[in-house]
Length: 313
Image 1 (spheres, rainbow, N blue to C red):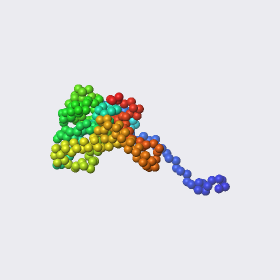
Image 2: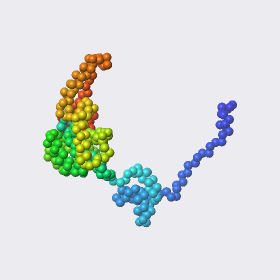
Image 3: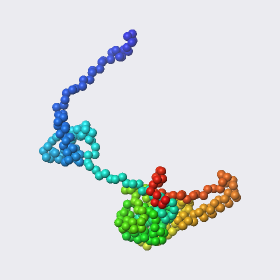
Image 4: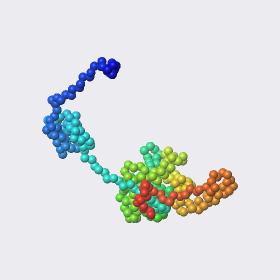
């Protein structure tokens, strides 16, 4: 330590400097050969193929430009290791944006399968719902799916409930059929469809199907078409007139659809005020309990700035 250097440092054998070889590998392709490989793989014949396919085809023709890994290295050096095939560019689907400010303005419809008496047998339930009131304006059960049957249901609905401003559905064969499209065009109804492979663009119908199929009374199978029709008629009637829906202020859909919700709210307010007057200590506020209000609008894909396509302004 007299010289200020630790003993271990002074006695340590110095590292042998690493000598980098500057020898060019004998199998390295020349710049001309590399340019030739790049030109071949980018030629119209091979531009859509991966290197392994190009290698095999050239080999079958008696041509060898380099190994598969060599072709990949050349493509890497030229920033071309990517999807080389020409792929279809699907247009960006517009997000369906519909709004209703009252009953009878926008309907949502869909078809769901009901298991029949034996495995592999199904009935088709056609259901149309008013997105504002959640009222099931019609529900039919048939032995099969048909655009003609769907159009007949829509004609019946328009005759009973009036013509809506918009009808939304997913992209099933009946929903996108010319029969349904022609009918809605003749009625001057705006037709809207969910985006492909987007499961939440038709939320009202899908939510109702879950309510239907998760109900304790929903059977595992229906014994016949008549049984399925009878069950659906009873279930829809019970839902429309007795199911208190949280999305519409705990009102029954029929009360909102036919304008009875305001009177029901007034009756509820009287009941709550009476309960508070009898037992004020049981209520934490000095005001009467609030009645759940009905939303002023019902949206399918409400935009952040509320500047969507307002079918029911």
